[in-house]
Figure 1 (cartoon, helix red, strand yellow):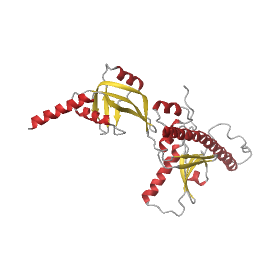
Figure 2 (figure 1 turned 120 degrees about the vertical axis):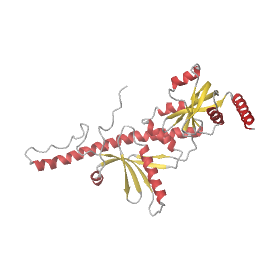
Figure 3 (figure 1 turned 90 degrees about the horizontal axis):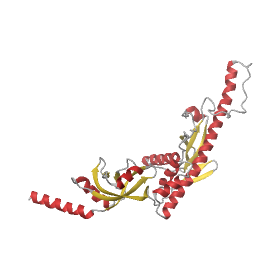
Figure 4 (figure 1 turned 30 degrees about the horizontal axis):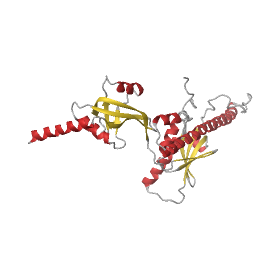
Length: 319
């Protein structure tokens, strides 16, 4: 498969000169209505961080943009494409710019060249900003649609993957899906606006419909108290299927205070104890981090019996 062509051949410089000359093109804008308002310092910083995070969420994966802040009444956070000083990187963007006459002096020639170079550079930035907006706007729609769907019925990982594959930028849609849990925010574009957030009661994790019944597993603790590792039996076909479908996925995270985690935690601290457990794949939508989610422990009675025997033994030797 051919690699996706990046929008930019190299990083664009957003410096003071670029800002002073407004030598950039705006992709989208987030506005905070703060006229005459007073904030605690911590609240103001939090507002800036949230606005900065929101405007960055809709940046296409293959583009380079920067965020600027405009203080003119309401505070505007703008995702912009800086123009480059040496002119357009792509051919065909300098058409219409006259070449300087060869009879001019060096200083006159330099002045004549500068204007068309700046014009072509800004024209290119504007075209790239338009392309970025054309990607991020429908990607926001995909993320919002996915979140709305999740509010109506449980959304499986398999179903979400099919829907996300149709997005023009999957990363944006994933971030917008998770952002739907937060407060509402309007993103403004040259051709319209999009709304993100909304305080939807949806999970940041998606679970697979496909499950794996693992037999004779060992459970090991990790440095993180809420994360355990499962090591299945090499003779277990379900363990082999899990490793083929999701290689390297063997950690378990307690994301919903599952009762099954209590048994797994006990097994992780008991010597020689094996456990039979049914799991599915859990994916954190925005980061794509995948772990195992314990649905139920099949040999609960055996574990409880071993725990009682262990407690009886400890009681005997301590008396």
